[in-house]
Length: 77
Image: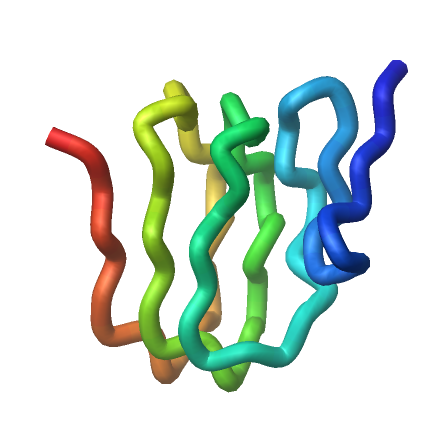
């Protein structure tokens, strides 16, 4: 199991973004992420915009659930 904390804002285990730990309004997910896990951003009240890289192949259940301020998600073509 490989664990990467990318500046301590992301908990990433074996390519899965398990939990977003930051407080930023604007987030760019690292290219090393292949999957966004269930509830990874759940209830991130400050989150307004997220950029998802091409490397992400799946997004888990309720990954962005209860993100009341989320206005924009940029996904690859």
